[in-house]
Image (cartoon, rainbow, N blue to C red; front, side, top):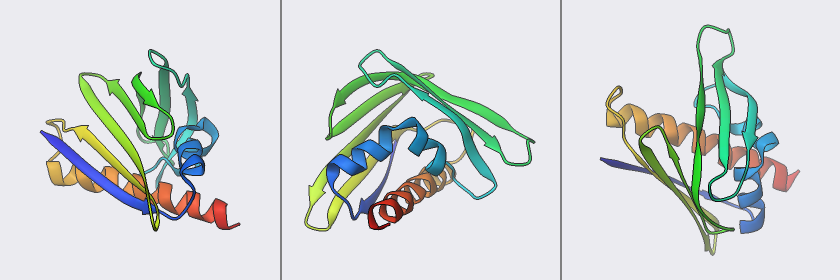
Length: 137
């Protein structure tokens, strides 16, 4: 099963791409809620390159490495990667209002599709807020 989340970011596509792929930026926006964060992020942004984003509860009670391998990169339009046995496709499309970011991913079986969609959407919403705050600053 595939799940899609999306948002509209009011910024130039090159800035959106940069903030989506830069490890320092990822540490700032990659969390589904305020009680989680990403204290460490590494990325070798090339086909066959690996990434690892350490996601942790701020109280230290839980954490995991979100890690995988880039399988396709078409800067600044598309990014695809594998993690575990799952595939993710991120598309960046110029529109009159800015850039539409659409993330389509393979669902897992531990959480309901609704929970997964809500979590990934929350992260994407954080991304939008982060980019727009930095572009307008």
